[in-house]
Image (cartoon, rainbow, N blue to C red; front, top):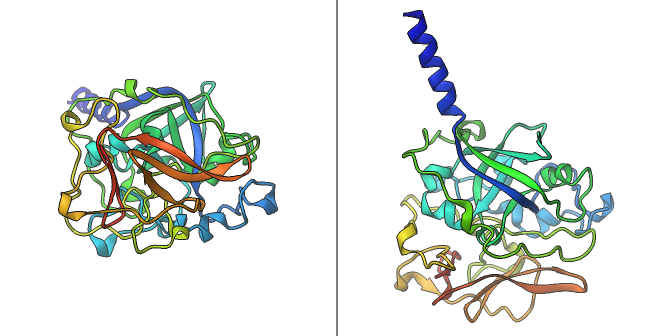
Amino acid sequence: MLFFIVLLAFAALASAQRVLFEGSGYRATVYYGVNDGDVCGTDNGGPFPNRWAVTSGINDGYPFCTSKIQAQAKTLTQYNTNRIVAMNANMMQNDREYWCGKEVQIFKDGKQIILDEGPFILMDGCAACMTASIIDVSAKAFTQMSGGKCGDNPEGFTVKVIDNDLSATLGDDARGPAKGASVYNPSGDAAAPAPAPAAAEQPSTVSSLAANPPATPAAQATGALAAEQPPIDTPPVAVKPAAAPAVTPALAAAPAAQQAEPPVADTCTYGKWRCDGLRLQICNRATAGFAWETIATCAAECSFTVSGSAVCQ
């Protein structure tokens, strides 16, 4: 009987540590920062304006994995942690329940990156991560991964997603164990090279999918997949893998009647999104000021829903 109990204990431990995803050669980008001492601000030798994550509105964004019930939805500020990370937006859209809340482990040269706040947790989607091996993190995590400063985008990381639901550690309801036995195939992650850093000592920023709703000023762009407004109490429309185009998968799917044109985006304002024809772009830092950076080239449509989510398919 004791032997049987021990076997069950080991089986439970093995299940909890099952690796759902593993990829190597990852590059880190930064998209938010809460209570981190503004480590990437100019006062601390960083490349961004002081309080950039606050004044840009990024910290007020709702992570893709926040509660689908509007009254329970939380912004990055309300989660009050720098442990949240963002990965491939298409992967997250395809199976929200499978990936949301899972533990993420990051390694460099075989040594695990440990944040003093606790383990990293997958809670957001990243558009740039769809076509390159990128993980989007907080300024605090980014600085630690960069060797103590907010400089060039650090590279050479191994990223693992573990079958360990940490939702409850953020005050959210646990989503239960990952269903099924399938493991996400990362072969498409590096289909295109990662965009180079904007300039020396300037990390790429705001890679997480952030679409400005038509009525929202550009300065309010966020790092969340669902953009400015909190989720509503209806399940999101999932993009099924079989329906996604082979080269450029859909970021979001919505009925045509719910789609709206993005705001006029001739002026490049940091963190702002737009569609330039079929090119989904974000205004990012460049060597001289700001410039539009193409995140994805859509196969047939680039638009925004009335809630501000990008549609690229």
